[in-house]
Image (tube, rainbow, N blue to C red; front, top):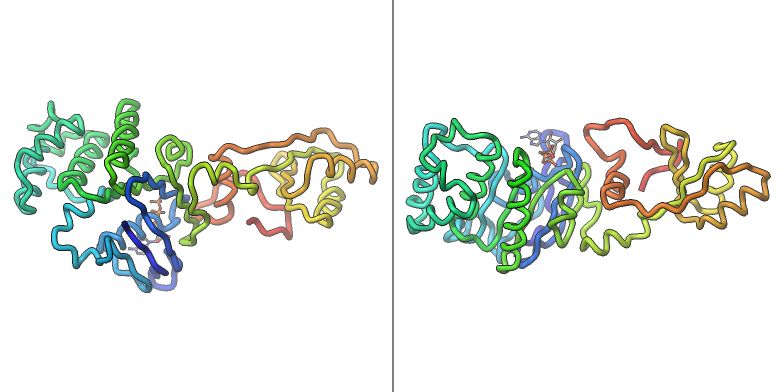
Length: 311
Ligand SMILES: Nc1ncnc2c1ncn2[C@@H]1O[C@H](COP(=O)(O)OP(=O)(O)OP(=O)(O)O)[C@@H](O)[C@H]1O
């Protein structure tokens, strides 16, 4: 079990991870989600002792990473940008790590088969595609049969077969009692494999719940309204406690008011509505909503109504 308490990382004057507290449980695939720059990799690096926290602590079964006696059998990780000597073959790379860590040689063969690299094991890593490198990174992470597996954006570069393989692998690891932490910025991907979701945005914890809880969260449901006079309707509904966002097509997304209430309030003021639809967003849409306005790199899309702060 990984326990993170008040974990904070500041680079110069920028807070990349802010007072993060959470637990990564064994036997569970935990999706670690957030837009670019949310602080996912930094958190993973702090778990692995690769980056020192500015504040707070991380323990793995009660110990910090640097105090673990046999770290490779406790935590295995794929961190983007992992250094692999490109001149080595896949087999040599794994054998080198196995030898350095006292892992039996037969384990390297097992990992090459498990990750589908058996046929290319004698090829130099510099001839590998991104997907093959990812597979080798995953083989490296699993080499010590660790209790916890941390994978930073492992789907990057994998083809359809690879994606399917990795989904099955992560499920199997969790079924075997391992704690699996996987980062991604794609909710749709995580939805397929994660039991629990942790969402970060700008270093802050936005959600930490099971996928079922996330899907049920009332934050998600809203009423889509198109109307002849948005300004008037916004002020009317806001007075009644609604939270409203307006997208670039001038559609209003109204939270915390029922469809019927909205219709009746509009009728009282003789406001014509062109559309009134209850929307239960997908997890992908919910993710966008939860993290909107909290990204380092923003693209166009739904914008908040002036004066209303996004939740
Ligand atoms: N070594 C560093 N020096 C300065 N700033 C850093 C450093 N590492 C990370 N950051 C900053 O910390 C913030 C969080 O970065 P991080 O890589 O953890 O995000 P992420 O959620 O993993 O993003 P992505 O999905 O794009 O990989 C970013 O603003 C990033 O620029």
